[in-house]
Amino acid sequence: MHKLRTTPKFAARRRKQHARRVRSPIMNLQIFLIISAALFCLGLLAALSRRHAIFILIGIEMMLAAAGLNFIAFWRFAPEPAPPTGVMITIFAIAIAASEAAVGLALVIAVYRHFRTTNVDQIDQLKG
Image 1: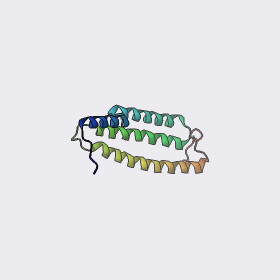
Image 2 (image 1 turned 90 degrees about the horizontal axis):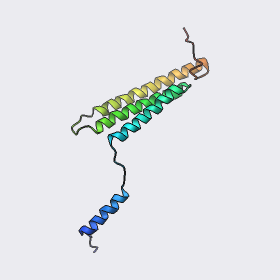
Image 3 (image 1 turned 180 degrees about the vertical axis):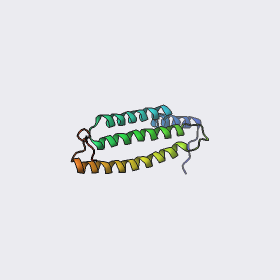
């Protein structure tokens, strides 16, 4: 029968080996906020600099995702008996984003059928 090694020296060596293998960065609130800010800035850049309506919608979706990430991060790093308010707001925001995408794409299709373009600079008149 195989005997387990349980000496303190062996246990300390195993902990050191495990610590070398697992060197993952500690996730803290600052990392989530930096990622969220970068995602929001990319979404804002996409929404303001693009000329096609679909890219503008994608930029808006990225900004909504960044806001949801902020809600989840602040909920996660709150003191322990925190109610899941951030999660509920994020789920609600995801539902709003899904309906916004459906309505937005329907509008883009309708505009494309009428003007034969999705370039927002060329769409300058409303049908009355």
